Image 1: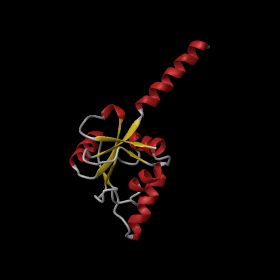
Image 2: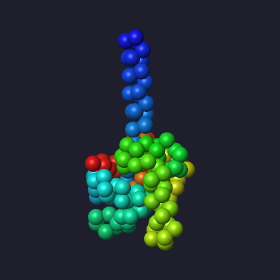
Image 3: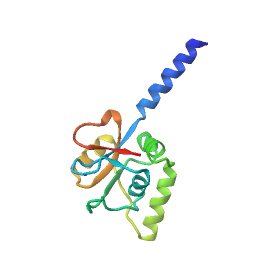
Image 4: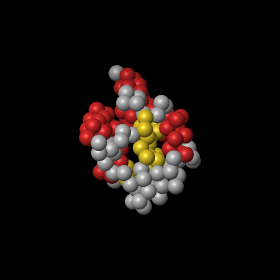
Length: 137
């Protein structure tokens, strides 16, 4: 019984680490952290400027991508459908454009690293020095 509990715990810990995600930004972005309301507003397409006045460019993965689901739940404290509803409402009303959807994490890394003002997210395993990690608190 103890052996099964230890194995289950190891599996859960490994699963949690595998889906650990970070919010990332272009390296020129001056911020090191974002408050949860600001992160939600940026990914929800309601805050379109960084504190220095530069434009925010939002990059996301497809709705069903495991990393997208993880960032919604673990960093933004939202379900993916809530973020999608917000985007659809703003786009339909003409108040905002939808974020740019990228195909995979490699494209996410490349686009965020090369687009001034960009924000996105990656699994921790994909993080490197080409982008800035933003802590959401």
